Amino acid sequence: MASLQDVADLAGVSVSTVSRALRGTGRVSEATRNRIKQAAESVHFTLSRSASSLASGKTMRVSIVVIDRINTWFNASAIQGAYEVLEPAGYDVVPRVVSTSEDLDAFVRHLPGNRNLDGIIVVSINLDDEYVRILRDITVPSVGLDARSRAGYSATVRVDEQVAMRQAVGLLHSLGHRRIGFVEMPNNPDFLLSAKRRSGAFLRAARDLGYNEFDLSVFEGQDFGHFRSFDEAVSQTSSRIIAQFRRPTALCVEIDDFAIALQYALRKAGIRVPEDIALIGFDDNSRAEMAGLTTLRQDPHRMGQLAAEQILQLMQGQVLAEPHQLLQTTLVTRQSTGAL
Image (tube, rainbow, N blue to C red; front, side):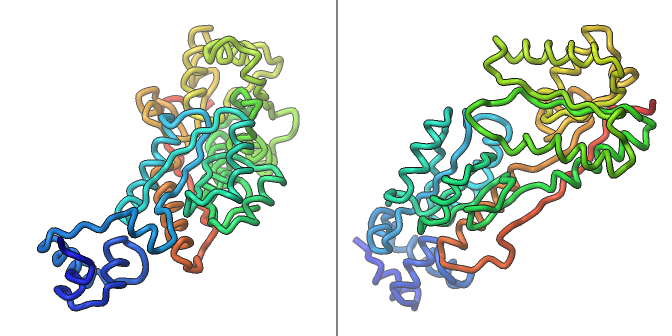
């Protein structure tokens, strides 16, 4: 059976260089890495991940913490992006789903004694002060993906939602809309989600463009527990909008899925979109184009790649040139908006 030394002799490098090249860690030139891989293939050598882990003191695992489900558009895209970076580098990507605040509490409080992870990526969750302290004190690096705060994280990747809301409000202003509003999703009582900051960004952007309090409405999200289903939440929100005395002629909505469902509910109630109420979503998910929804496009797949690149460098002991990355959204105009 071939050994590391056999591969090193054949490639003309040291054993440690072979180990770094095959594990995807450390500084190895692309030409040397390719030569080592060819040498390993020629003698049918496969590096044991478990043996590599024991030798290096690393587990070769990165945990990605998401809320509720893995298969949402955002979570699945982010995990795919992270996997594409971490797997070729020899790391296992281990999703961790937290469905309740108790789940999150158990995960975070277990971190100081957890020796089964080399890094953590946390997706879309705002952390309280106690969790921030725990993340700051552990030796394992952490990255906040879609984080609203840098606190506690070694690095972060997020979109600039203030600029995004300026894009959305600027479009509505240019189209002649003078009464505008923001629609929040129903709240998850267990978590403060990052998307909940969008209504504040909307109000700041609108005030900067000269809208006053009489021009603006925010339809706040109630707890999911108040509704029997997602459809009921949409229906009640639609009714609240229609019943508004100074009904807005245009709305920004927290996420695409709610905006698409709201568009259907408004039309069912006889409200024309965009003639009576224009709608702008946020995400540009896979259903937005089919629904003709104007929206702010973000790219969770790319965000996942960037977060993985950050955690990979941190696990290798590198200092990040830009630890807190701020990405821009793209305004995509479709049939749900029009001139007043």
